[in-house]
Length: 138
Image 1 (cartoon, helix red, strand yellow):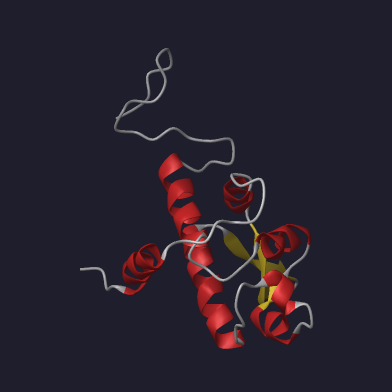
Image 2 (cartoon, rainbow, N blue to C red):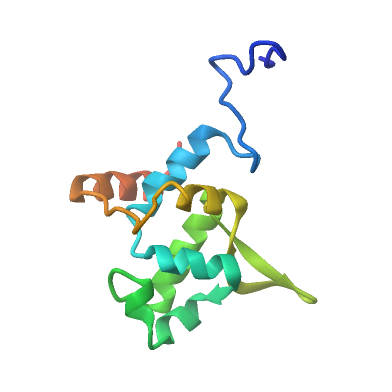
């Protein structure tokens, strides 16, 4: 169903933002970010430079970037989830994709929702999010 140019998007079609994402994608990403162990400063750093999961695990300032300690393998799992949500993307060099990630325009849009630190989700919300993330699709 197409949007009427005079009245805007139809009720069954979500509005598009300037970064090309719809409201549902931004809301979905925001819900997931509240369940992950990354602090706001982590995402702000990703907007300036790329970070790999192995680098994240060995950084001396890791406690400033994370709510809880995180190994490289677990960080990579979170990176893959954030890539699927559209919040992160793999960095590309002259030889192709690298293991490093950067923030996308959708990620910047989601982070800008919160003036301070990203709020932490309740235990119930984190459990629901884990089930949605790992439950096989039929």
